[in-house]
Length: 454
Image (cartoon, rainbow, N blue to C red):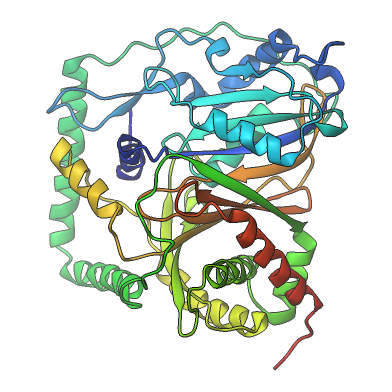
């Protein structure tokens, strides 16, 4: 019996406010055997290929089951009537569409709500792009996987060779939903185990003190920068999104990071800070003495054995000093901050307090929070090329979510030597994502052309 963790449950809450917490990617494929002579996707063959791989990603045939009060947290159960046709679809060919048109199609598909009575994922094929390519938009709700777990899932659905053996569709029967008495027993067992852990800890007061100090130090670091500064980027957001893509090579990011003894993630943050600086200046807002606060998720999957599954993230809040005009000095400042903050990152655990009132309060606070201004995520992807139904994946563009009053964010994804950054902005509060992308490209060029300075 697999209960949702506290992190998993809380990823479902923002959906109620219209802030869909879906993560995803857009993969650009060589068309080859995927389309017929009319340019349409061979949907039957593709569905068969995807369905044969689902045993490698069992969460894609499961739904979130919410038991009645007193039976414990929600849990994962097999979908009673899974049909791959509900999840693998195609849109009519968008003949010779460029990237701007493709991103518009992705936004149209992203805004279609996922049905919680079915597994929370969709895969759309978009044929007919410029150069004869086909795009795949894979959308997965955050409750199923975070970034690293999503990459593991990607490895299950895609091939590492163009001519791999075609898997067979094996018969599948859903397991029944646990009965009420089973849920009661499981809930009592979990509560008893939690109580036993508390009692055991009480016999070791030194351990309690040590853990409390570590937790308090982590919280203190998170809030040490005070409240986030006010700016036009922090207003309650809606449901529409705008996207812009910044492309570079992973080798370029590593050259810059090696040159100054920093991490690739530090370079990403410095580049994004340059884009935000350009945006605020274009709006006529002062950037002198301004340091925006960015929340940065930190994966903790490596601390557990086995493949990454579900959500296991910590987070740190990093100041982005927009007041520093020199990209190198800005990079060094950010790297010095992240080096100390990352050591205090701990997984976000705890109990889930249920009830509509609690969720309403939490969502209301999210739309008015003053802890952070923006969001930046960096997900290392597969280092080798992938294939789907024999078609080579030429590029992968990440799609990240926003919520609350964070109107602009960025997600980066490395794949087969490429490093692709997607800027996402709320359609009403921050539609000028192209300005952010232009500032990021300028900052990246400056860092690439720079020479090491003491």
